[in-house]
Image 1 (cartoon, rainbow, N blue to C red):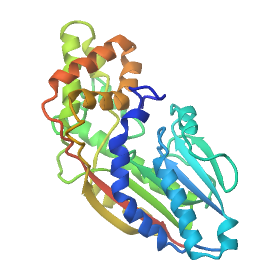
Image 2: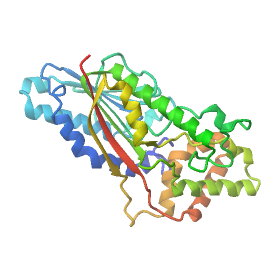
Image 3: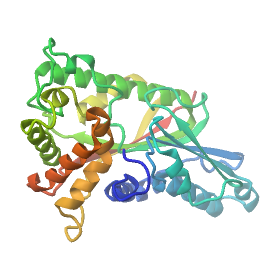
Image 4: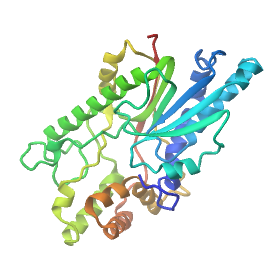
Length: 342
């Protein structure tokens, strides 16, 4: 993700992700209201963790406000007023935590304390049984690494001449990505099972596919076409594309169910529903706006790979003319788990 607060930053171009989270807020609010742990009057500290937070604060700010409001409404004043909340923002070490903390709308101190924990959510991040409410939004489709065989010319999984693994990729490439995504999701759930307290909540929201085939969004294909133009003009090498793959994999419903099976003794599913990713307002949504958002998400990674910011700018500039549709055909799952008794 592109850090900072500039016009190309993720902070300035994440309105759709924020809108998507807003659509599920009523459901999350209801789940929180029915959670006895969050309303336990003996609980003096509640720890909330946003996993894969990037440099946005809307999710953790919403949960914090709701917890305070719920306890104000349902508990005696003494129990509510003594509560302290620790809000923990977590993302990889490359995340722009400086921008993130500059946007937190609260002063550090009672009753609100905030901190950052750098690291991948596919690993342990917190002490055992320390988190009361954990959440991740639009992050679990990123896998922890690109399988080695994907960029190995001698492998049947070599995914040459494309930046995505999809239905047109070699079967071995699809299998490698599916295997990596499965291992990652299993690790995510196993680690959260250790970190979330009994009765605690784990909210996950991420893209899913409702078909067996992996289909690439047209907007990504437009970016790939721009990359290929630069190769034809000998501004970039063919190897630059052959060795780059987006580290994303959209899981199927069946793959999610398979990953949940081994953790049934730790988590129970208390809510699961699919919805369509919100489409942008056509009055403000045009090809230029699309490119800005795609650049905010992918520009940094591509720049680090090819090592030339001017060519990154040119690539995204040319992408504008290659866009044939402005819709984002994406399905999302809201999957909420509750930690069972230890």
